[in-house]
Length: 185
Image 1 (tube, one colour):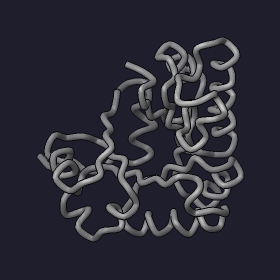
Image 2 (cartoon, helix red, strand yellow):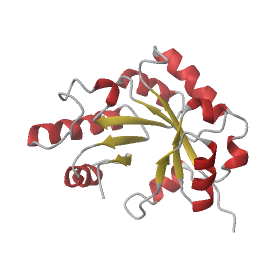
Image 3 (cartoon, helix red, strand yellow):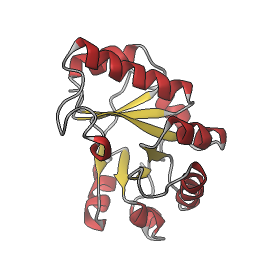
Image 4 (cartoon, one colour):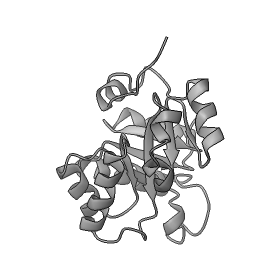
């Protein structure tokens, strides 16, 4: 039986009921393996997403390309980049840029997944590459960051290297679709 790509409505309807599988893939054999294995979502580099072969290899995988917030630049640059990705059949985009940029993308009807917790391009804020949310103050900061993304009309948040217990509590208090990157079971 052929499955179809997940929609935003599918993801929202199953939030809290189904744990989706998502992997990062950067080469064609891995993408093909993800498709065959029934992986539901992939994070991919923009170059791979823009390649016309992408949907031939992975017709049923929901794709979320992302770039460092340093790359596109202004909110206008991010918006142009996001529409290029959507035109290439992306289902959403990752954006670790400012709330202003995320808001702009959402206003242009782009499904955008923000970033909370350990954000590699901003690793000096928490003091380096380490878990976020291990203290009450840090956990509350992660929770406020998710709430800010929600208020900016993001669709979801990648929550990275946040303790599973903190992630679970945040998940109960947000409408956002959370993508765990070392932040849950």
